[in-house]
Structure formats: structure tokens, C-alpha cells
Image (tube, rainbow, N blue to C red; front, side, top):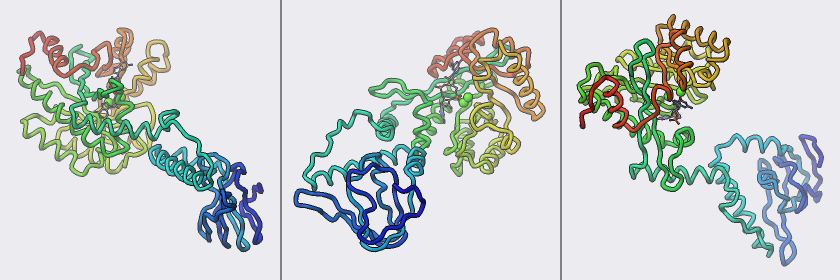
Length: 396
Ligand code: C2E
Ligand code: CA
Ligand code: CA
């Protein structure tokens, strides 16, 4: 096949034959082409196409031999689209959209095989299930679980490094899949963010968090510990996020200092809007943390625009802290930078006393991780909190 970008054909010339390998698709710029396929009774015309239409893309998309022959009816000018151009775009596409497209192609090929009197390959639909189909299944199951109390909330404590006491908690959602068992939020939150399901999941987390704060207050322990909730990019773009939160807090007579918002930088964030939401939250006493600092999309380019109160350093940094002097220097600089910006620092993933010691030496304010406590069901977390203050939990 000619690798030139533009491709000319004289009337009656063949562009490709049925059975040819799928190297290129074409955009027909001028002229007309006839698409034909062999059948029991000779040859069938499947279509005639004109300027502005694509031809030969199907075999390229599913990497199968051409199912038809394309012949010029008149002189044609074509623009060649390399297979790599198409596969690159397909691999960057939402897997669900890809699965829908692949489904359509399979159906088209089966119909063509029926017309031609040949046997289409019979596929086991569960073998090599495309990622998109897996996601559609998961999404439907999550929808179902939202209706049937299939979600649960865990609270993980954060230690005040200076006093050794519990300063607050992070709310972490869990999903108990009816067949697969517990599914990590790392898997289903991404899925929920791709669809509008993050809204009901977020509402669930908020409702349970507010209930937990009411339970904590009923323990009569003095200062209420805070609970930090994770807010995804899509939730940030909700017009009345902060107003609604303030209303929910005031309905329960809870102080706005009892809730913290954790925001992770991502490609989807609209920084101007996020900065405005953060300012509004802070203006009303709700503190905001930048989550997973030091990984992914967190960078200085946006950081100076975001008025955070807390930097949450990702646990990947905690791992190197004890053995690597450079990691400690980095962490020390983060603490200094945060303090110059009037912010405090949490380090996540603290699993050993040695790691906690490093936090003490470097003046890190809060530690979160298995050493301090695992994420626990709400009632357990409240019980442990009361015990840590030397009190017995009251039943709400
Ligand atoms: P994250 O916000 O960075 O949450 C911390 C994760 O680290 C949690 O995983 C927690 O269980 C885990 N972790 C805590 N301490 C340790 C430790 O000492 N060692 C190790 N190896 N891991 C530790 P989890 O619960 O699986 O959550 C994963 C991510 O899912 C969270 O990361 C957060 O981004 C997201 N997520 C969880 N709950 C929610 C939610 O309610 N809403 C949203 N939007 N995202 C959530
Ligand atoms: Ca978080
Ligand atoms: Ca984090």
C-alpha cells in the first residue's frame, strides 16, 4: 500500500480488496467509490460513498482483514489515515465508548457474514471481556448498591504529632460488591467520577460523615475532632457545594471547623473555579487540604493559586523517609514552605515508629497511617477515640 498522505485513483481502479490486511483508512476528498462484497449469488453492492466520507476504517479499528472491496466509480482523491493515528485515538478514548463501538462492529461483521452466507466467528462474550464492558457491569452494580445500602464508611484517625492525641479523621468510602466482595475506592471512585455516580456516592459520604459528627458530639468530649472528606473534581464543579455543606452543618448545629475538604489535583480541575470554592469554604471556616501532594498532577504552577490550609503528603514519601536523607530534606522543605504559607502538613502512610520519629524531628503536624490507626467502621472509630481520651463511648 502506498504510504503517501494523498492518494489518487482512476475510475475502475481498486483501492483495496476483500481480505487485504488493514493498514490504512481513507478520507474521500473527491470522486465516488463503490463498496462491494462477495456473496452466494456473486457480488453485492454494500454502499456508494462520496466526498467527506471515511472508507476502510472498520478493518483498521478492529485490526481484521478487509470485509469488502472498494473500487473507484470516478477519478478519486483520497487522504490516507494511518492505522497508528486511529489506534492512538482509540486507546485514549473512554473504554465504554470503545466497547460500544466494538459491539457495533461485531454486529456489522455478523450481518455481513450472514449476507455472504459465511459463518461469522462465534465468540464467548465473557472471554477477554473488553475493559469497557467490565466498566459497564461495574457501573450497573454500583448503581444497584447505591439503592441497596451497599456502601459503607470508614474513619481513619489522624494523630497530632506534638501531643500524640487524635486530632481528627479522614472519611474513606468502601463498596461491598454483591459478588466480588470489597472493592477498593481506588477502582470505583475513578469509575464514579467518569459518570455522574460520584454525586450520590459523595452525598452518601457526606450524610454519614455528618451523622458521625453528631454521634461524636453526643459523647460530650469537649472540642469536636474534624472529619476530612475527599471531594472529587466533578463534585467541585457543583454550583452550590459549599452553600449546601454550610446549610447541612447549621441544620445539625455543627461548627464548620468540624469538616475539612480534601482536594486532589487532577487534569479535570478547573483551577480558577477550585480556587473560588476553596476561598468560599475558608471564608466560612471550612478548612481545605491539598491531597496526594508530591504525586500525579500536584505542581507549583497551580499551587500558588490554591489557598490551602493543609498539605497532605502522599505515602510514597513516607516510604523513603527513614533510609533516605534526601527524602528527609525534601520533607523538611515542604514543612517550611507550608508554614510560610500558614498551612500545616499531614504525612500519610505512617506505618512504623521510626517514621513517626522522623515526623517529630521535622516538625510535621499530623500523622496518618496504620501505626496511628486503620480505617475502621464509624462506631469502632468513635469507641477508640473515646478510649484514647480515657472515656467510654455512649451509645447514640
Ligand atoms: P487517599 O485520600 O490518599 O486515602 C488514603 C488511602 O491510603 C486510603 O486508601 C487508606 O486506607 C490508605 N492508607 C492509610 N494509611 C495507610 C498506611 O499506613 N499504609 C498503606 N499502605 N495505606 C494506607 P483507600 O481507603 O483505599 O482509598 C483510596 C483512595 O480512594 C483515597 O486515597 C481517595 O482518593 C479515594 N477515596 C476514598 N474515599 C473517598 C470518598 O469518599 N470520595 C472520594 N471522592 N474519594 C475517595
Ligand atoms: Ca484523601
Ligand atoms: Ca492522599
